[in-house]
Length: 155
Image (cartoon, rainbow, N blue to C red; front, side, top):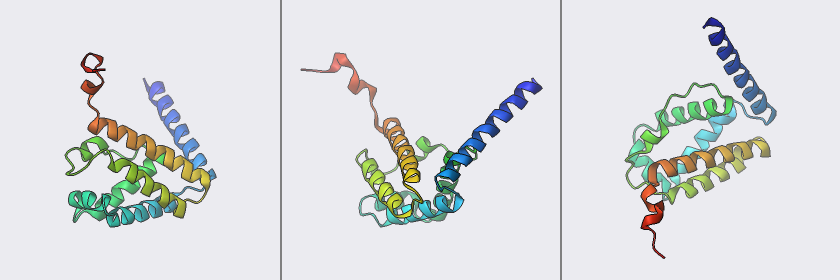
């Protein structure tokens, strides 16, 4: 059992070390993540469609949300396992959230990366990750399997 635990710890450490090396190679560090998150959420708040939805949910709690998103992106980039939030549950029941907001969120994220990413590779990595997250959230929050039931389709 001890060997299994030690083997797992070594495996997790190797994953972390590899992620840290990959991020360093493309210019990603904690300072970049902080700048990305702060810039992006400043733009979200100012966005005519995204701002009201986010602010209604986060009013008075923006600093905590920004810190949580820094922790989230750091954990994702560096594979640290440090983020313990539940993104789907956090987005359930958000007033006025609709699937069409996700492409707007992604577009704003992309333009923010255009302005702050240290390298094209960093932009590509963060965009690919954001696209996977947006797809996952969209499916989790809005997908209705009954709509894909072939017995209920006409035509």
